[in-house]
Image (cartoon, rainbow, N blue to C red; front, side, top):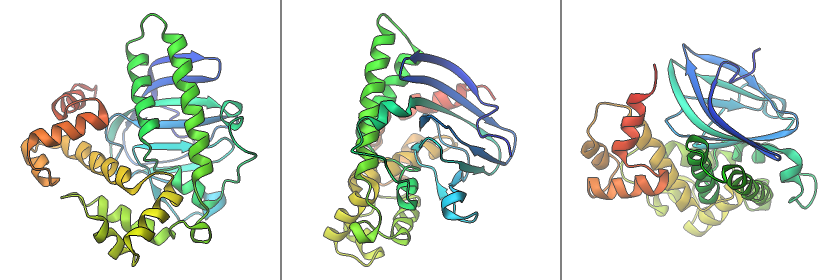
Length: 288
């Protein structure tokens, strides 16, 4: 089986001693089924445009061949782990990728980390505002380098190394240590992918048969972030998909439950660094 991203195009890149930052474009002529693996690097990927339709990942060596989880806006592949990726349909997608040497991250860990099922699953859909901010800044620097770009890229990569180490250590190992069961996390994901107004914590807690307090504490233990941050990221992911359609920005704003197009634009720009209109223009200007 071919390695995933083998046919990708790296449109720009900056290399520093501990990491390599790239802007990557992935073009799909049809459904794909590939294995992706790095031996001595952590692969951190944040999509700048919507991911391909129904992209899913499976760590078959840990989960068996039938369990697949969705890839979020940000995902991480640890060194030595083989991720099987499947997509459906055609399309293209742009990402900013930071490939960080294993030792640059491992030095911040308390000790060797055990890549359990729950840790691997949590790394396929990361909702982490600090990582997101660093990756957006990295994308800007790679796309438009200026004086001191190498030094600045090294500093950003260094911060990402610390954030990744903290995130990996913060992820709990499931219900025994206070995290949520996989079926509860899946119910939350399914609800958030429906679009519409953001669900309340009470609604999500009811879906999981938990109290709000149990939900918020368990979610943070499982995913390493607050459920509030995760809800925001999922709404932005849905918005990105809508912006690839012919619907007007006003229609999208109301479909997502925003009070007005301006409140939608503010939230979208805060999360992505671009207005909905700018993001749509970027989508339509990409080579086909």
